[in-house]
Length: 533
Image (cartoon, rainbow, N blue to C red; front, side, top):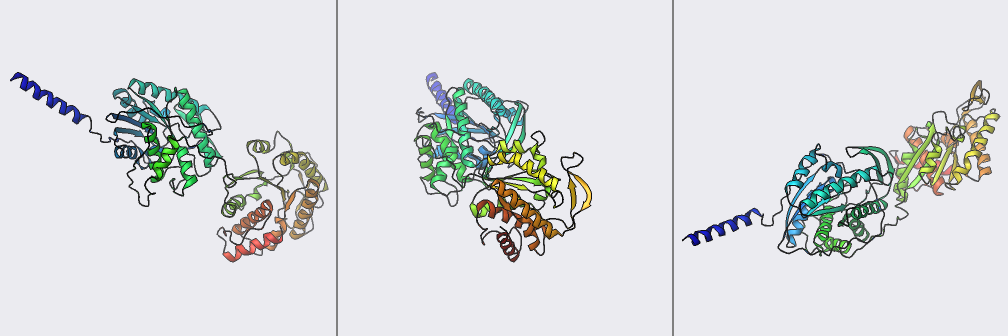
């Protein structure tokens, strides 16, 4: 009788153990805030093959996986998508996640943060086969402080993961598709602040991020990398699926499915056979699985060479605030994006009373030399100052001397250099070099000619200087007088159209957008730009 009771108790205990194991169901605990802000940018550059994932996992083994990340991880509940893919492929997984918008790895190692308060007890009190972390896109090519604190924090998480029976796995994300990368600086793990915004297109950003993950993987002793960013690029090269959310940073549902499939292939070291699609207008079965398999197991490295349309057109405008009064650079960017399919990076070097003499002195050059050093400029537009007038021959000579000083700097950048003439005032004031004022001194006297005559003088002056340096002229000054009813929105369009015609050496097409101008007005402005081009 005692043996019979003992047998019954043993069966009951065994049954209870199976029930507590979870039976292969996914346990997803996601902590997410309301923010929709993606972690702010970074980039990659590596053509190294993806690390091999040949480790075999027993078919009947329950895998415990913890996801720690930000909105690039929690969008579309990607950890749950991974669990569904694993289950569809016959695997047993128990998944938990702690995520928060813009979270860095450092946040998960700090018990004072919301995510740290949850992640650290989970790491310490549970056993994990993998803890999946993401080197944040707050790492950028422009500094190393964020990368240093993120790597130090990754090592702390790895210590906890190993103590829990497993190791970390790195989630390597895609580049921003909106052409911007934010530069951050980290004074310490708890103080990471935004410094500046830079232009970087998707491919080099993805390349940079992958290289960062490979660097982290090596520093952590050769841990696995799930190359979601490379999978995005391999997919974009073959198909027209929209992998991005409307903000061009976060993933669409299809993008999250692809990322989850990449993690599956990386964790299990085998082909993804099935993805349980729950998307309307989803790609045909086998497509995303094939991309994930080729990327992870086949080591398929995407072509990350920038196409001509991938590279931004960089425009530097040097002049007074009058060059920005009508937002010509912004309108120019819209036109180039529409007609040429290229993004534009524009920057001003300006002052309210600009003269070329302002930029000749390298110690007080309005930031010109810094701008030249920080970017490769495709075109440079230089405004002729209104301080120049017919009677101010000393000012004209001084401005020409200053232009001779800076022209070699401009020519080292590009052969697309243009002098931009503004429209003259009627009876403008006469300035002089007397008094030692580098911006020139108002003599109190005025010219006697009309505004149209003054604009014609600017054109003649620009032509003379342009001939000396072998550069171009944008004759906006005279074009202005041909616009019979000048309005701000029209003037910005006219300036942008004239800059477009000059730098691309062709007329703005009839199909170009109007930037809010009536169609007839926009057509008239394009004709004026052509006439004075």
